[in-house]
Image (cartoon, rainbow, N blue to C red):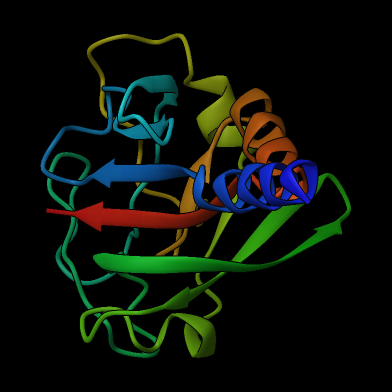
Length: 164
């Protein structure tokens, strides 16, 4: 009985031990503002992240919106709800859990890899160009996307928090 209780506790702790992502849109896109944290709030890895090109967004200042068709980034708490691949692009679908991102599923907001972000990965000091790489999605480089997908598939990643 004691071994069973220990195993149940170990299993429950493993489910609670979730890594999470924080994206800080107040930081410029030239910095690594997409950060994956351990359950103990230590940084696991980070990367550049494009913001949505919609509205009055500029390379240095994203416009934030929850409107369908805005092509803007959203903020708040997101839950990763699925994974799929289309060609060379990997997607993690996101469901908005906050009033500021409640349309995320309807808008098709996701985390995905981008050729543009990958090619700008090593260029310091210059903000990522606005492009169709992000119509509100969290576009990151290929290598980082592989790491994020692996964590999700291992059930060690469930939430993303975007702040401004």
